[in-house]
Length: 398
Image (cartoon, rainbow, N blue to C red):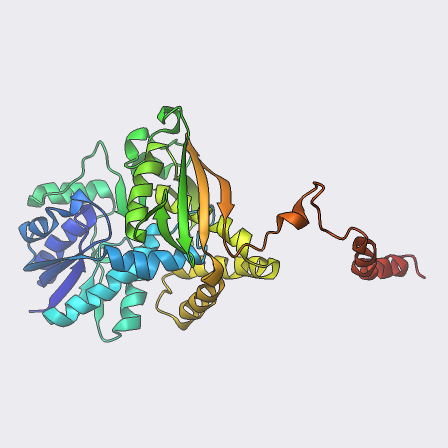
């Protein structure tokens, strides 16, 4: 009998997929679930997979690996997609794909599978990553094959066959979350005119209901990596976990955007990412202090490309590795501290310092301590404007 390893989240699509692969394809189903910081929802996941028909269920704690080898690289590259999405879901997919390949090898599976929709980005991310690492494996994608056309039909299928699913018709949202953020879609969110209902959010307080007193925090970085919070040395994983709680309390990190999917359609997506929001703003503040103008301006090009690379499922490419090398080098001087004020949905940088700062207050000040040579400006402007003066004469026909 053919054997398949399924990326199993425990949600509606994946739970129905376990039953469908066994009943319709006649396959032995092995499930793999990655702990990327989802929390309590993983507690019964292996039992749920076995209950719906899996022959074995694997669960791996990949939080440290996810933070150190994926999240921190994206943070250092300033990778956000379009209106600011910190790419939480997209970053998790290549890691899940890599572990799917490992489980397939251990279990002797000829196929890998997933519960991704046929018009979504994740099918591309997972399958491209699998093929980059194990081109001999084959993919079976239930949602591209079965005749269930909607989530309501999937719920009916689950109810008909006694499949236990953690979803109701009253709250039919599709969630994907890890320690870097939560993606929320489906239900009333599919109409971009509808405001997201408050009950759809899992981590963040409604900004209007957040504390009336601002809270200031201090984040420390060592070579671009978060290394302390409020003066206490902590691992990056610990800092991210703490900032999700602190930022979520203040309503920080909500995104509601219409974005361009890889497959060519637009979709309305709602995200929560308190820690990612705070850390991106904080590290950008350090960069502005320690990077030269040329490096600052050039990195924007690479950051946009890196974000698309993640979003488009191209993690396992030489391009990504080469861009990582650039940012690793650039961040050798990104050590320092940033003070951030959190208040009713906002995260505002109020201070920054670094032993490698290029900022020189004696040159920037307008006080009597000013050391800038003002007399040099006249000659500089004459040379700087030389091309423009030449064009002016050309336009006058002289």
